[in-house]
Structures are given as C-alpha cells and as structure tokens.
Amino acid sequence: MAVPSYTNFLFFVLNQMKDGKSYRRNSDELRQPIRDAMRKRFVLTDEDMNEKLKTGGSRFEDRIGWAFTFLIKAEYIEKSQDEKYTYLITELGKAALDDVLSNNKVLDEKYLKENSPNYIKNWNTKIIEKETQLPENDDEDDEIFNLENAVDEMRKDAEVKFITKLREMSWQNFEDFCARLIEKMGYGVASKREIRVRDGGIDGIIYTDELGIRDKVYIQAKRYGEQNPVASKDLQAFLHILSKQKAKGIFITTSKFSSDALEVAKDDEKAGNVALIDYKKLTRLCAKYKCGFRGYSIEILEVDL
Image (cartoon, rainbow, N blue to C red):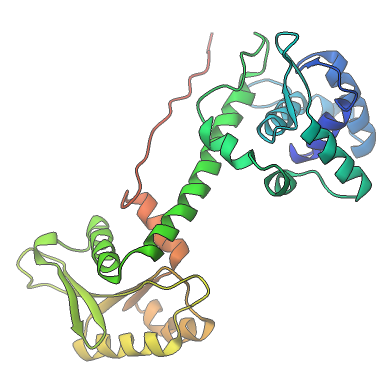
C-alpha cells in the first residue's frame, strides 16, 4: 500500500515518546522504532518506504515531520529545557495517549481539535514564526507544510468570524454590504446604487451602467441565523417581483436556502434569472473579492542549488 496520511503517524510518534525521554526530531533513536512499527502495522514494502516527494525527499520521513509539527501545536510534545533541539512528551500528551489507548479512540486531527485547548490558537498565532530553531538537516518540506496548514486553519477561523460578524450587523448595514459586494464583482456602479428601496420586498437595485439605461439587478438580502433557512415563500415573492419587472435578481442570505426554496428557484436559476447566495457562497465571494476580508501574501523560497 502507499505511505499512510500524516494523521496515521500521530499515534506512532506520540507513542514512541511515551517514555518521557528527550528526542531530536530527526534522530534514528526516535524514527527507527516508528518506521518499524508502521511498516508492520500497514504492511509497507521497500518501495513504499522509499517513495519520494517531488522535491526528492522521503515521503515517509516527511510525514513523520508533519505529525511532529501537529503534536507540537497540540502541546502534546514540547521543547526540552535541558538539551537544545530536543523534544519530550508533555503531561497533556501522556493523558491523550492514555485516553486513546484506554478508550480505543483514533488520534487524528479531529481529536487534536476537540481535546487540545490551544491547538487552533497555536496555528493562528504562529503562522510565520517557527516553533523552534531546527537542526540544519531538518526537512524543508516540513516548514512549507507548516505554513500551508497554518494558512488553511487561519482561513477557516476567519470565515467563521466573518459570517458571525455579518449576522450581528444591523439589517441596514448588511444591505449596504451586499450592494458593495455586488459592485466589487463588476455588476454595477456605486453612483447608481439604490438601497432600501422597499418596493415589495426589494432591498436594493444595482444599475449595470453609469446612466442607468441598461439592465437593473434587484437585490434581496436576508440576515438570518444558521438555523433559520430562507423559506420557499420568501423566494417565491422575490421571483414574482423579478417576473413582474422583467428583471434579474440576486438573493443573498447569511443562512441557507431550504430544500423547498431551492426547488422553487430551480428553473429561474438555470435560466440565469436569479442567483442564490447562501452563507458559504457569500463567504467565498467576499474572500475572493476582498469585501470584508484583508489578505496577505507569503513568499516561500526554496534553495535551488
């Protein structure tokens, strides 16, 4: 079989460190028992063990490094105060290992998120900061993986905070925000925007040109909680207005659409008469068009000599 995913390595790395000794993360003293145990458990062949990354490094060794990094973020292992470049298991790590063994649980990233109080925070606050000064021969891929996963965790955390902020807005501010997003997407111009029209349930109109002589895009914005989906009657009312005005529309919500509502809008959506934006799509669009989000670029350099 192929080399297991990094989550399969978490238990074997932590279990090898249960003796409380300090280990260098790249030492054979630490890694050889892990190699032997995993090779036996997953029936890995020589070909599996020698599988290479695109960068030329060992995939198996690289995934030990990934697991090591995740256990550091979970505070299950930590830097030793006695010897430079070494790590040892923490009391939290011992408790986790005992819990996994005693209760037949799986030590994976879901377990880390649910049982390590600072796991997510440690990714978010140390995105660029290296957790330690590593020995010179440490695999560079581990640091790249570290950054990529930290960025992913930060993105997820930002999305949760973002949609929460939108739900906490006043309805007036939310309607303004939705209009700004539509403009950023290239569907209208700010000088011809009309908000809070209140024309039979229309919350805003975006004109697609400066003079307002081309098509108008009608907006309906519902600031609902996650457990309060948009009902079919709300969508039917909006579609009725669009049909009457011979216009196109965008229905935006911080919740989701009920299955009945989606069925009601199916034909109009296919025909391009209406676009439905639920909280997931809203978050993605806002991130893409930098509406309510701010982004940073990180350039990762690799030695190419």
